[in-house]
Amino acid sequence: FSQEEAKLFFQVIAKRYEKSAMILTSNLPFGQWDQTFAGDAALTSAMLDRILHHSHVVQIKGESYRLRQKRKAGVIAEANPE
Image 1 (tube, helix red, strand yellow):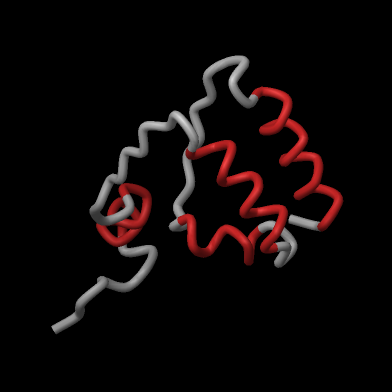
Image 2 (image 1 turned 90 degrees about the vertical axis):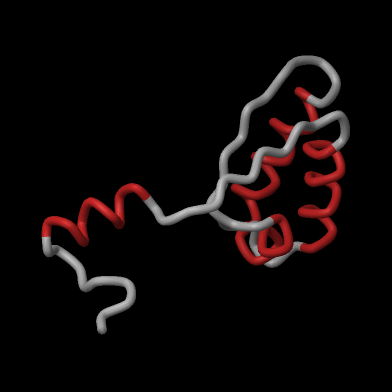
């Protein structure tokens, strides 16, 4: 995200904070979010404070369904060729 896009996303989170439910998905752990949001650690920290307060975090582990389908179709190489 650019700095402006990161700020706009933060504004959405801040306006919805403690007013209504949100469902968010991400393929990145929270520790890498500051790299995504224009490298702005302060903005990311404030955003995560609002997102994680009263939250239920569901972590799903496993191989990407899309990548598995591409491997099966031969579009990309196997994960662990032996």
